[in-house]
Amino acid sequence: MLIYLYLLVLAAGWLLVYLILRKVFSREDFGNLKLYPLAFVLRSRKVIDFFDRVVDKFPLFWRVLSNIGVAIGFGLMAFSIYFLASNLGTYLFAPQQVGPQNIVIPLIIGVTIRLEHLPYILLALGIVLITHEGMHGLVARLEKIKLKSTGLFLAFIFPGGFVEPDEEEFNRAHPKTKMRVAAAGSFANLVVGLLIVFLMMGLFLPIESGVIVLEVEGNATKITVGDVIVGVNGVAVNRETLFQNITAEDMITVETMRGDISYRLKKPINMPMAWILRGIGVKRIDYYRPMRIGLGDPMIEYNVYRMFWWIQLVALGVAIFNMLPIYFLDGSLFLNSLLEFWIRDERKLKAFNIGLTSICVTLLALNIAFTYRTFGFFQL
Image (tube, rainbow, N blue to C red; front, side, top):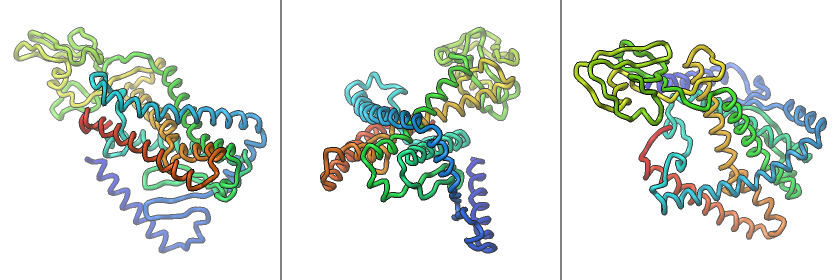
């Protein structure tokens, strides 16, 4: 609960600084920096100049890449719709096959995501949003579409970037041009997500080596936060054995990476390994995957792994679901631009988009509803 206090203090600090700056300085003093009660936006023309230099130096490369992005965009849109439809079918017609792979939930910090993951989420969002918008900007300048501004923002604690194209120029652009720009963001996210996955495969061993202790009871004297438990009474700790029964007569030996810890029993036991760990004061654990070249501290290695895990999860999630043909998502703009080749009547085009948006939103909502119906309320 301490983190809630930190966030409350931070919010109060934000408001205090905002009020002081507004009192002391005029709006003109901030230039390209725009202040809000719990946020700021920094606009810059230099980023647009950077985009121009990059696309002018390697125009063929970016042209090929943007065309690949369009092809990938088709694939991501088809996959996102297929996944939601088939996933719903599994919930409805094959509930015995439902597992963690069928979970679909919105990523809402403090609601569906535990606040302890906040640092990882903030880093992931910053990387995903900046690369997403940056790729939109690069392809827009490649297509000679004017950008009004670009910049960075910080909304309370959530970082990100933005690209603001000239709407009139964009609307007048050829459908192929609009498709390239629309697909660019998700394509960038897909590339980032896959690069992180490959990086994780290279840096970390493919198998878990025990569990790492993340929280202990106040009366725990021997086991500490950061200990990696690799075995109990000679039985390796992993996903398969954690809930298997361990039998012991008078002594329990917990094998950790820093050495063995022994506990004398008051009476013989036959219980799941997880219960034994709870009995010695372990309150919360997670599976531990070591790095190929160790950093010397398991907790640092664990945090590096979690950081990469959240980046790839957010990047791939945004890449896929952003291409759903739902209003306000890039997928809708992408599909709308494609349909302009055949449908000239704006009213028919709008009606088609509304219908498809309704179908996709319904699919998404049903997947979320069946997830919580099956697994109950939980937090990642």
